[in-house]
Length: 67
Image: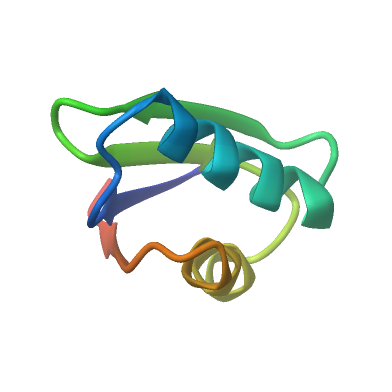
């Protein structure tokens, strides 16, 4: 499980775009978003760097959170 702080994630469209991007690299990924705290949690077989890069490619800066 990976947790990221995602800059610029402010609405449902943002969360949908991020989730769709992640599911292109791992269709079985479980993605949970928290707009208020600008956080996303991902359970995936893809590695952390690939997920982070995919979020960036979708247009959102991010950084890994502990835990």
